[in-house]
Image 1 (cartoon, rainbow, N blue to C red):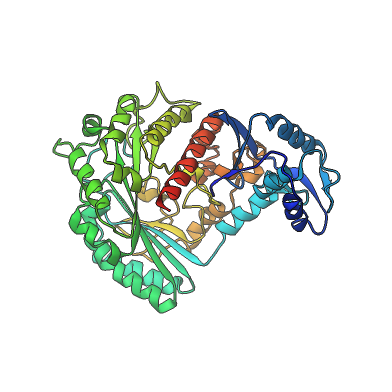
Image 2: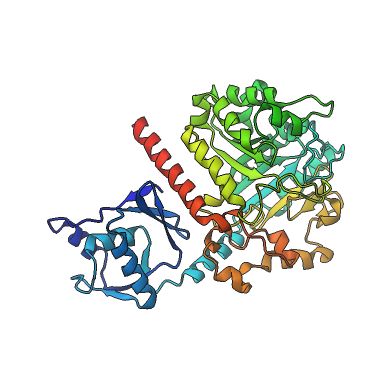
Length: 480
């Protein structure tokens, strides 16, 4: 969805009136969406609807009239008849607001609509989504890692158990999505090479679509592996850098103490030199030590990489597995996204497209918010959440045929898929509910509310979103 450049001025002729009348049979009563948010950006007023993710631009001189009209609709809806006789603003303005969902039918309960989309996604049963860890070991020794590393590599008996489980229980699926994960999954790439053709054959037999993604630290994402991407059905790869060369090498050292930046950087550039049918996304981990030099990292990449690889930014958070060491205290906190937004601005200025997951139009907070989504570690343990992969949190083992359907797991399984944000008064009255949808399910299971960083810096998030949409539109126009 691009930025709708709305024509908020009087126009001669009846084309706008005709368009409006054509879309209002029978007459309807309109109200303002509760998720409209307006900011000023580069001298223009922009509106962002957090539910429908639509953007409109409004000349500053007419914004007061638009604002007054929308505020009046929060008190009382207005009847829009075929002549438009009850409209206090020009009809073409109403058309623009209606087309971008800033004006909606009074009959639409937006909270019910959010619930509908949420539960439709959560309980859809046409897909199987698996995060498969080929290993729990890693060639790097990042001090903040959220996983407890073990020299565990997937063996062929676990691969066979995965295939038997999939073939026995999921033959009715129409989509199968595999996420290769670790540790460092390419340390166990042989499992990827062995399992992929079997999973692809299974999908062909049942008439399902197969797709896969890969999350890697990038060290082994070399030319040889990149050439195998089409055969492996991998359409999405995520690689992380921890800032520019020196900062990255301090945080992402190999186990022998050597830095990893040059190898990862070279692999990213090499990938972008080829036309592989795959999307590569760059995540940049941010902390107090590397923040001021991240712009140098962004500027280091050649233009053809910036044009192909979207980037997003995340703070390094303390966690139990890393001993709760704090990496981001001076620049992180209640307004955490404020600092990140400056990096998004720098990225846009340097010609990068960004891919903030919070801005994506989805019906879930996380990939785990989906029926028949499981994580499988290299020892065959099955998980509902992909956070720690601690065996104590598994719901069963494929090797012992306790895959989550056993009586001992039913309580956890049932609670996992019935807990929701709609019993939380703060959530259902929050303006960012359409984006976070209650946040982390695992935290909610623990009785906590996980609010997204963007909530405390909503204006900055919307400004970054507008920048990225405008940049995308400009790029598309140049390509035409």
